[in-house]
Length: 198
Image 1: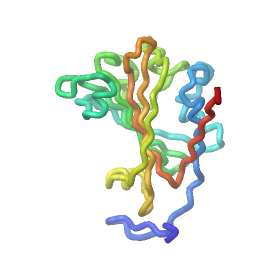
Image 2: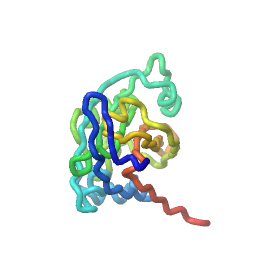
Image 3: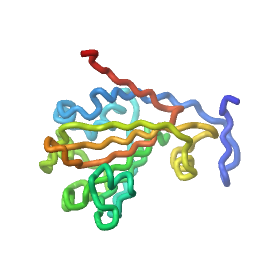
Image 4: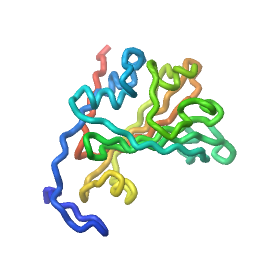
């Protein structure tokens, strides 16, 4: 089974188009130097554009209580704390390529551009532009089968696993500022790292 035919409830069956994988170098993706020199949009959009393709993001913003795993990483009380959630469908050319949801402690980003339900960016990054500078990140990557909602949002063919990249950003005092959860379909992503052997 090569997964060339896609069946969707209410959509019928159709032949799957092969998607060109997006290549991500996570060694530099969150680099502050890259953020500061890039004025064309956020880093994801600029990297897609550099590859000769057309990026677009559909953005939805809400304020809600964090899930237990997000609350733990942000060091918040899940019963009382609020987070600003920026949910994005990341589209390359005309195809959905990834889901990227960012969670911020509401008290930290209240009144900032991160509250706007649109694609926002700033040289150096939006967090840094309001004085919240991420000094380090912790990445966690798991692989699983997608949920029904993920299948629908990403138009996934049957039996396509997804990588779940959970990144927590911390300031210089180790205070967590952001958790970003990115859902990366296995049929359209290549992830690269450079790791110094010192």
